[in-house]
Amino acid sequence: MTTETAAGLTLQTRKQQAELSFSKAKEVLTDLSKLGMEIKEVSNDQHLGVCNDALDRISRAEKKVEAKRVELKAPALEEGKFIDAIAKEMQSIISGAKTHLQKMKLDYLQKAEEERLAVIRKAQEEEARQEEEKRKQEELLKGLHFKLADYGKNAIIEISEAITDQDCKDMFVKWVKDFPGEETWGAINEQAQQVKQFIQATGKAKRSTILYAYMLSNCAESQKEEFAQQLKEAKAVLGESLAKYSITIKEQKQQVQNTVIEVANRINEKMVDINDKRIDAETEKVKGLRKIWDYELGEKGFANVPDEWKLVTLNTSAITEYIKANKAVIKEGEEINGVRFFQKVGLSGK
Image (cartoon, rainbow, N blue to C red; front, side, top):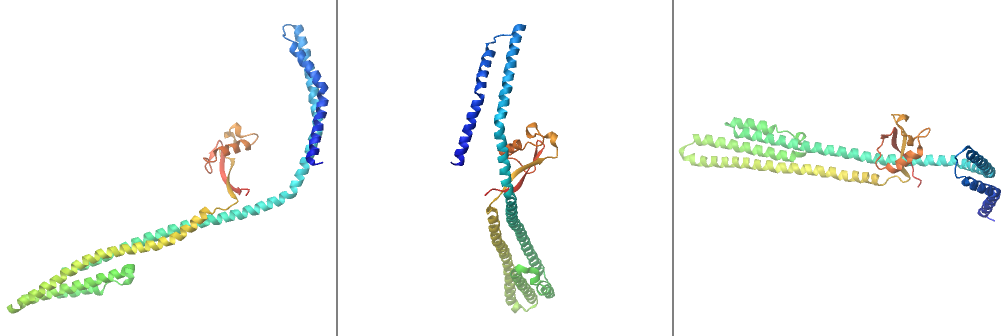
């Protein structure tokens, strides 16, 4: 005979015993019910006496039924307490091991979650650093370009205003010989050398115009045509040099822009790898952990908690039902009805 069969027979036997114990009482109660219903009115003292007598008999019968119920149920209650005690003892044998394992599991998963979040934070910090580096590089390159453009413009203006050969020599020392080195121009040093060459060529052309203009004003009549032609050619070279410098400045702007783009592309390549790591960390969440809503008494105190949320202390069942119904809109640290809600990390049961 299986345990289930034996239990079924025991339950059936108990039902039969209960029905047998209450069989006589059933007849008495039925008669009392009929007696009570036959009393149609209470309009005088005699009627009141009959009513009181009937109520007394019904009360005594109810007490006997209740006493019999307690008597019949007592063995089952004792058996239930015994079973509960045995089960509790069995559970206590493994509860320590369960708590131990759950703690280790939770510690491990929380550490994995912290490492995942650390990867995300590091990627975000590196992304911000790279963006700042890109901004600084762009500002530096633009600043160097403007500095070079101003240098060339000022040099050309002074050279074009030179009057004597000595002026040209002084301009050469100032703008060509003392031209800043690579440590000044950095990434645009190649463009800077082109500007230096044009300054030197412009100075040479300007010196030629001064020389041929002097010779033209001091030569014999027979030589005037020859020097006039040479002066014209020197001015043409000077004009061409100035025109080329203007074109060169435009080209340099584009070259600087290209350099800025190259720097940005190098930084963006780094960011692709950084973002890949961040996305991996964000999508590959730690399995076995979940965030659950919890609560505690808020700063406003117990007096602010509504009656349906408290018994002697907080009503766990009522507040848990509230969380289930409103977890999508509850905010971290929010205090509602005197109760503060927050999330904590726990095992998901998987």
